[in-house]
Length: 91
Image 1: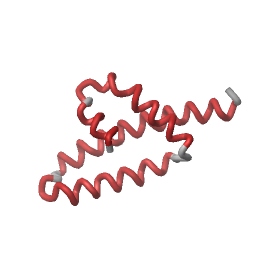
Image 2: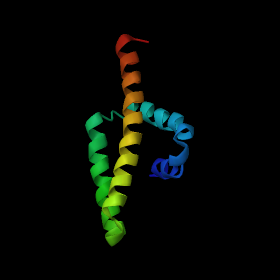
Image 3: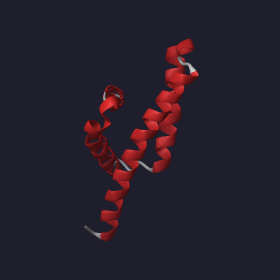
Image 4: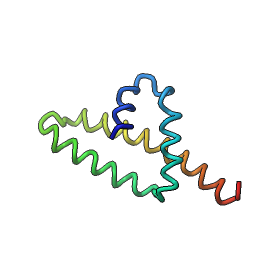
C-alpha cells in the first residue's frame, strides 16, 4: 500500500519511481510471487477501493486506479522476469 501511495503521488513523474518499482518486483521473486498473483491483488485493490469510496468510486476513478496498478504491476513483472532469467542461466 505504501508503494501504491508513492506511485500515485509520482504519476506525473513516473521516471522517478520506476527504479523503486523495479526493485520491488525483483524482491517479489524471492517471495515466490507469480504473475497471476498480480491479478488477484488488482481485484482485491479495486474491491477495497469500491467499498471504501462508495459513490466516489466512479468509473473514472476505477479506470485511473486500474491503469495505475496495471502500469506498476507490468514494471514489477518485467523486472521479476529478468531476475528469473538470470537465475535460470546461473548468473
